[in-house]
Length: 157
Ligand SMILES: [Zn+2]
Picture 1: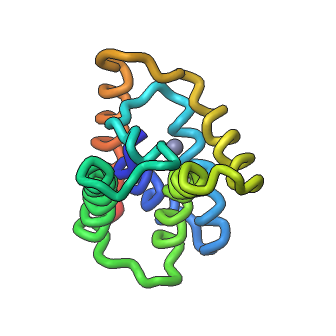
Picture 2: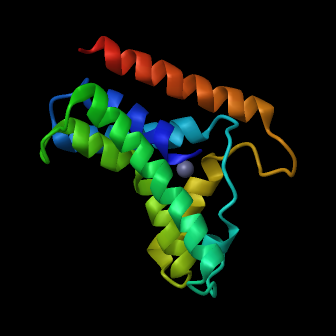
């Protein structure tokens, strides 16, 4: 799943708990939970290749990831204001993207055993395997998660 809905869901989780450690853990679990459902991902195959060079294609896919991440963060900050560094919201948002961040690190360092185990767990929760062609159910599911989490974040104000 793209990063923005994960971050929005993370912020929502963080808004419901008072401990930063719990928020972080629930943020991570929330990521795995959302990844269970069929969802949409934009192509990032250049980031997956261990021997990818830092060329134009690699950087354009990195830029997509960055914009995706920034979109989630900007929406949360816009609705809730900027949370402090030790706020459960901040920690749940961080937890909500950690599984993808660790998988990215594994692609860059495939010999690291711990990263390999974590990447395998992350891959296992993806019950729907990647198929070519449009993934309409995934797109609808993901858009629904985005709209619902934004609506719920607004309702907190
Ligand atoms: Zn994921």
